[in-house]
Length: 317
Image (cartoon, rainbow, N blue to C red; front, side, top):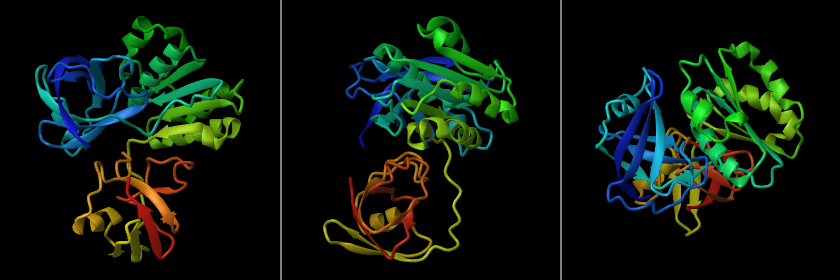
């Protein structure tokens, strides 16, 4: 996917650990690709480290995009470098792509954010308001001081009356709050959640039985923990007829690249969805954190997933 040079035109220090960057194309042209809410982009920072960031601005903005970056103490250099970026600096940005999107057939939408997980859900709130849809945004954070976009959500968005802050609520008390949210929901409602994995599991455990597991949409920031000790070799065949042996300890993606097969990739951790491809035959062993249960029908992430059968036939997208 082609990267485009963007210029930083505005930086807002949302909290001591979170800053937002507003970016415009270096050539000052309008955005070439309009995106749907819930999209994310790859950003190459000043140190050359590539990371994925959700777009958190209004999707109908034709000229700029907005990303939020949380400084992580244990990061591999990406977030720290992005906190050293200044107005006027340039970043390489990919075209937006969606793994989380608004369901158009829902009668009600419930957005449940945990911490920095507010980023894709804020964009979805903008889109739902524009559509005139019924929605509410529940925002959990350790405190008001550590929550991003507080002043924006309280004073400067037209849907401020749809915001439900839950600041300072201990994790052990989240299920009780979520049960109150579940009241009045029907199987026609859809739930969208983003935040720490434990937080999202609570959301799914409480709201999933009410709306249905396939109506709970999740955006992950972290790779799944996978036990690879029992991995065994497998054969991968492309729809072109080419066959490759994939040894234990090496990914399907790596083997294809070693053999000169071009596959689009980004995170290589099963988060971003860049390398997702079609499965024509065989049974995948899904190990990603990007595909929903429905998405996994006939698809797999080549960077982390393997097979429950000895052979897979795949189609590269």
